[in-house]
Length: 456
Image (cartoon, rainbow, N blue to C red; front, side):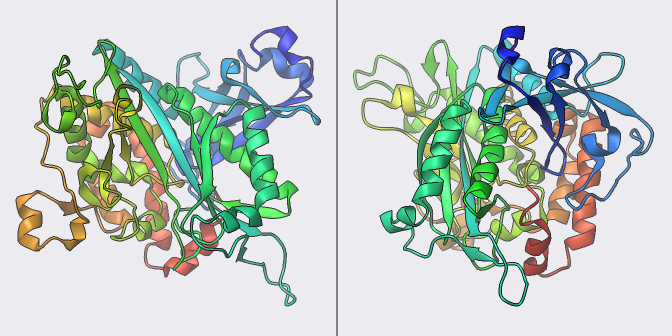
């Protein structure tokens, strides 16, 4: 679609970016404007670009005026996709540019691209895969006129019956995702009522996050067409299942997967637990920066309602093979296939995040672990919450910050993440998320869920 011939079937192009509140904001270009989409793009105000909070509250920072100033959202047509061939609606992600033609410092997509470039300079090539959880609800009203809040399935967790209850939606979603170019590795009913998980094919990091952004648009459209609504919020219903957006990371150096176990012949050197030394350093780096960076992995008040023990959310700073309660789960892959399959899963990420920032934070921390030659902590082979306080101290296992306010304080004082993202971007992110903490931090989770359930 990056040439004129690719525009023939497009009536309109949705150009969107994900802002610091984790919300997709977009503008539509009609057919006659398509040729300029990749050069002039769309006008975006400072407010809608990076200063709105989840409730559209307008923030300000010392460097950014929320009222005065514009930028351009330049469509990346090489990553465009057809959303609906019948209507002719297509989509493309945007990079944010200043009017002088330079990349704007608040462009989160460009921030991720910068970290990827840093990895390539260190002779490391990352691949990212995302598992997106969502809850599907029936759309409509109660007899009283109040909004219906009824999950679309009631069958047992992970059950075939649960899938069959939303079969038409699920099959249409798979078709629409495939048509849009988003490759689904598998999908299944999850733990909660109405909850589904879509696992997307591993890609280079920017393409992987583009796929996630596109997939959420596709799923909302398909749900509406089937009389349903879909929520990606961290906690759609308090007391029910929580939604994660787990990030799987693998890395190659010298054509070898650094997270793969050594070959049975022992021909390839490996460190402890079958990891290369760099693989271990990456895990150590991510763990070391989790406390100060977790506000980038979620950023909602409800993100910290989700980060609790026994919810498979990775609320404990530790790692372990196949351990779903650890913040990092090591996935070794099938016997004999580790070179292709081995990866790590970072679990504290959720749908309220700006996924470009979340993935950039994870990869930057992994690179930092390599640069600082950090030692790999001992793995945890049990639910960490079952250990005694003494055992936890000995293993350096600690909980993540308990609430968004504490997490934002850690992020604000992080010299590391300021170095990664720059003051302008980080301060804009902090401003949007700090409003959410000040407005909703003392409310019951149920009240917060009612505000943000349909925002992401």
